[in-house]
Length: 330
Image (cartoon, rainbow, N blue to C red; front, side, top):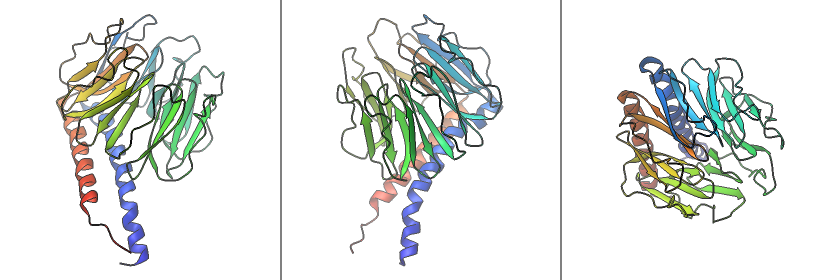
């Protein structure tokens, strides 16, 4: 095999991850436009963050500190809850494709790859970088993180704990933010974490994680085999994950954890006073999100779950195939 053929082969894996991630993001958007989707929320409602808008035209959800956001099938945005700093004053337009919530600010990604942010800007967390090559966004407590199409990272906002000290490289495929730290996944399945590491927020060794959700002082991980792992502060049993290997999505709140099973049902771990556990949404949950003390779920039709499940199976199959290939000795 020539050098160029070998290099092209190496690039197939990160390209596949990005393609699969694109399917996971766009599948609900495509399906919900035809079948519709509604939002339910529960937990602490002191700012109305659980008073979800009615209707079935929603395709994505996100939770901020004490506010919530949603993306409609027409590409427009809606937000509700605490609006002290204008974090619920969504920008006009119907060209948005992704959303993220920070502590007291909000972010959105437009179809053309540009970014927009609004809300508290004390630490310049809303001063988004220029450019039209962004593919993913994440919001921390007072900082923001974005992934470029070339696999590089950019972070801005509060850097008290080094959470904006970006890691170099062009092999990143996914990102996430805790309140005081940042995380990025590489194309080989490994992850890097930087910022505050209270209660051991760092990722444990290994490359068997497909997703990690950042909580207040704990982290929740979804493994390639569909099982869960958690670490960090466990005062409210937020790290006592349920058994099983049928999980497909995760979210972590301030002191609680959520997981979505492949049958569309929810599993929650929490013993806090705000009753984030009190929910009955059936088995058509397509996506989950969280705030500090509240939870959000997106209810869709079974066909959406089928598409998401198929994408997850393809990703797992590809991973296994790559790992089973014999290593070449030079």
